[in-house]
Image (cartoon, rainbow, N blue to C red):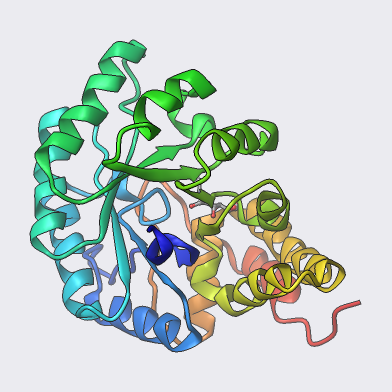
Length: 293
Ligand code: MN9
């Protein structure tokens, strides 16, 4: 039922130009390259997109323009989470009007809302649109973690399609999937993608797929064929790169890599600080090695 939400979904980065405005030409280049590589769809306006550093108007425009560039060629999921229900609903309606296949939302954060408040937030969102909702579970950044019972409140409702699961607690992922085998679970930490597949994930949403989607498409293919050793080798290669990225800053590093590959991604938005030349050099040494041993 939810097959269109399975597979590899880059969490698209947001390119900026020298005036700190969204560079939609570069976004188009990125999207075209990824569609040609065979990704299954995109996660738009998420953490990787620097969503919480964009203005509300920019977020609406990003949702709209990404859909216009994709023009129905691939599955689209819009991350509409804001800490106010009212604003999240406005973004959700925008996504639905633009033809998105699903919306997704991080739990409202900062004020330490009660579970009842968070539950109501998600149901208000589901009530506001006619497209499925994917819960964005990312305790390390949102500070909100759902137990199996709490997640069940959502997943037993047919309007909730599944979870973007960004946590390395794979026992909990296994329990979510066992309780709701028909729902989709998309792994959120790229560095443990193969572990996630082994514990029941149906695919992944991630930031490193902006520049190494091909490797992860292959890992998924090998996993599905039962060729686990070969998949593990590729995951190991990817993880050398991800370790180098984490050292310098994930989004900054990814933008530098893609710019080097010919897509002008520009800087990240302040307060992020861009990489020094020395950091870029160190990163490029890990990424652009010709031999993997
Ligand atoms: O979308 C991403 N999570 C965050 C998922 O950026 C918080 C991941 O793809 C990570 O960037 C990646 C590196 O840690 O796994």
